[in-house]
Image 1: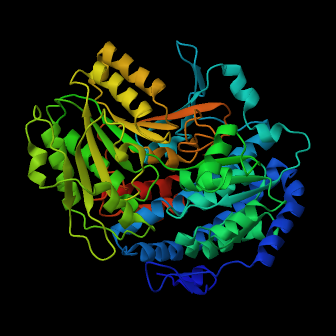
Image 2: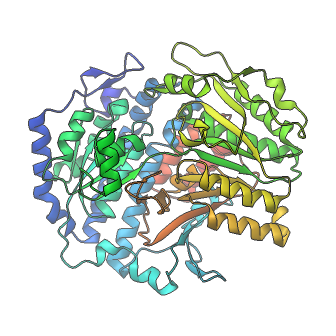
Length: 606
């Protein structure tokens, strides 16, 4: 395996979590100002580049991104306490270089389409109008190789009311319909948890919105910055991208810089509100109520979620339920649960006959995985605060008969180390309790809560679960439903599922799949539901990714088989995830049937 020095320039400071993980020093004020001014000077020239020129520029980033991939993954694994040569490294491949490379290529293809025909091509089936008049746009798969590698996965966007089939094309790629755009400078406050978020957010601002980017790396994963600077060197050399380092003071200085025209925040709602409305306290509350933000430039954001998994009642086969139990467990285990779309609230029908089996399967999955390093700041405190005062229970309570309500308490799996947290089930929550903190605070650590509501009637349960998620849970980013295909053969249940998909106020909803696949498909928009406002930001404002540049999106809906084959490479128990991830990165850079089958072969052996 390549050494870090071969993949990125040397850096000088040690980051928290691992002694050999180094991060660049804080950028000086003079260099911050110089970066902002350089970008401002290049903004209009970049905005007015032809789509074909931009596509060529994007493709020039692919070799460098692929060249640093192995060293980048190794560094991230060390920071997170993972074996760079083992299956767990698949997490960093799959959520890092493979997605960035896919984003680069798919954006380049869209810009080449714009150059040739004025608009990016859409997914198979294109645009369709529902019986109720709402418009849906198929986004994924885009081609036959997508269909091979993401077997059975279908993704479409539901547009806002008022959209028509004609308006889809008319409003697509809006930036590229402008005659002489001025462009601008986006200050991007990078995410600290997932390696692909900063580069992909930067690519969206650059090539979808038409603005050059000043990226401030999060101190949590600032070690990734040198890799990104090397991978995206053609952008840096032409003055279209600058990467800087530091904490809140650096961010505050840049936010106030006159060269900045827009801001994109990936982090917490508290960070967003502090930047937009000022420090917490009476003055922040007054400003929010009066609509007087301290940051008055346009702002977009992606801020996390209490992500629900809604299990529709049905008599599932044991292998079907085991697949979904592993899927739910993966949504907690992946990245030590430091994902904005990690499963956080398991919503079960009251009296669900298979509750004991499902929860016992979850316990089996959690018990099979050693606790992970809690590398994200504040995780131990959040875990302690959200479990304090709750009874400690043994896993045997999970097998109680379904007619008996679950006791209130905490079930832990695995012995925590000095820097690790146990996988934790918090059970017996009261769905009617407005003061329950787990309904309103994203744990952002290894906690999954369980709540029971409604009844075992699927139509009644779905209606109640939808109300609960919309009215009780914080956030608007993503949700998932587990639905047996036989259930939808009943027209009443099929209608109930459709109503739920329409009514749930989330930007991404997945059926039988982790909503992270919406993020991972790259072509769909990713972001919070547009019902959020600047004053009540929930999971954030605006969408990113959206390589086909579709306008007027309300939400994205993904459907997948109840039980996939082969085992998805992101599952916690996939034995060759690292090989799949590395091969997927190569395929993402330069697709071909040989490379696609190589990815599939590794996946089949997992």
